Amino acid sequence: MGKRNNEKRKKYILPVLTIVVAVLAILSIIAFTLENHKNITNNNQEYLLDNTSQIAVLIDDSLAHRLTNIQMLSNLLSEILTSLKVDIATLQHILIDLLHFK
Image (cartoon, rainbow, N blue to C red; front, side, top):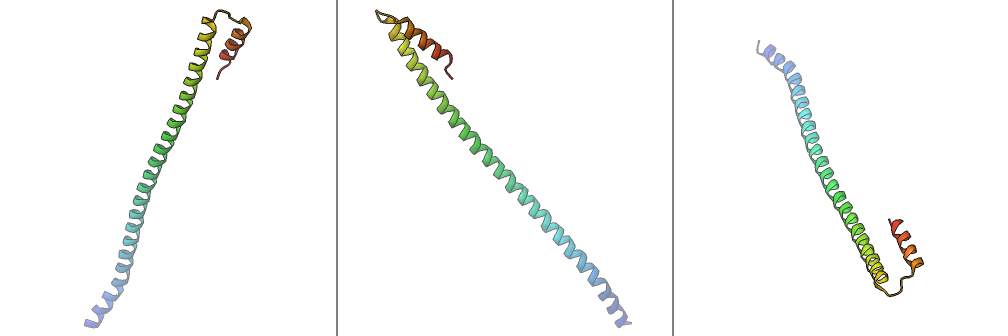
């Protein structure tokens, strides 16, 4: 009878161990997936911050260049308008360039 109980135990041990190993494998896959998702989210946030920062710098540089150009045109027009002799052709050329300024 003791031998029979021992055989029954052996029959149940293998399926139980298989289930335990399967559960551990599933848990490790879930843990890996959660960690991987966390890393992807962090990488995406860093990318967005870097990209936004780069775009902000480009916009800032562009606006600074445009401001400088506007100031130069303003000074030039001021000098032309305050001079005793206004060259109408030059003034027209500057205004046309100003209207096409991008």
